[in-house]
Length: 430
Image 1 (cartoon, rainbow, N blue to C red):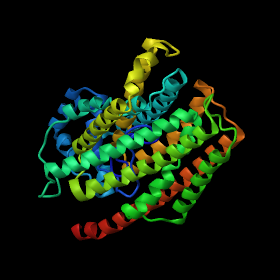
Image 2 (image 1 turned 60 degrees about the horizontal axis):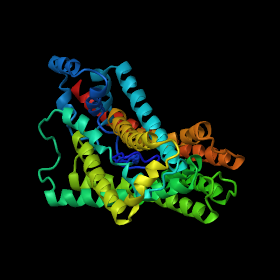
Image 3 (image 1 turned 90 degrees about the vertical axis):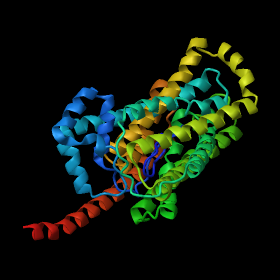
Image 4 (image 1 turned 45 degrees about the horizontal axis):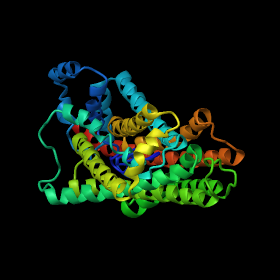
């Protein structure tokens, strides 16, 4: 799950993130949703400050715990900003933003590099590589457990039935497992830097699916972003010296390229479908609901990957794989464990940014981290970075900048509209 950090939030939702794993990234979010209510970010403070500190502030009248469960379907951004800075304080808010950006970028980069390291040292099980992308989902039970229960502020009086919820979680979980599998195949036959650059096409697919499924506007800047990112991927496709792993044939390289492109498209589709689920089925997006979506879909994806591992017969080769692993048995186990943990750290960062800032910002940082992975791969794994790759990376950053600028314009326009709408109310109150 490269930039896919299992993120399940408004359009990124999944799970998030959801590149190589469920949110990926792997949970990530599309930009069509209004930024979630910033007060949700307070729940994430459980990772940084003692619970007693929050309870004292709560007693002072902040009413944080109730706010953390309120629906984050579209709200006025001015209210969000007031809640954000009054309740948190500017330096605390920035601390949380930096902390979650760190979680997302480091988690995603580490997960991709460890996944490539697993293959380089003799690992060859695609289903096992798929499983580790979601297997550490119990880590997400920690924030869910510490999240205090409160009255349900759902905006609907008719919550979905258990059967409907089960169907939504099962369908997304199965699709997530297939998406993770394609990412695993892509990483098997591509270098980490090439893999990450191709994953940048997620931005283009994200814009297209958001247009058709989530009614997001398709402006000239978004179109420019789609075209530029597509050119970036095309350069990698036609490059004869893309720095694939040793011993990978041209046919397998093409297979890896196709699987990574397909996985990026499927992950972007998952993000849009998850956003649609929040809007049409769940009809609410509280911190606990988003975490539950991540946990249950990751559970289904992990089960599907386990079934695939045994059905394919790959489980029979795991013992020999561990014995013959280049760095030894302990390194084999630790590689898998830390790969799984890294993906969930990435997921925590994605969800954290959704609630501290917005779903758009989470998606932006997740995509930006794609530029970090190729550089880290060159430094740590000694991937080749030729001129074509450099140009492809610059094109991807250009497309990324166009995408971000368009959303900046949309955000500024929305703020002006809200400010204009408030002025008559302020005049009448005077």
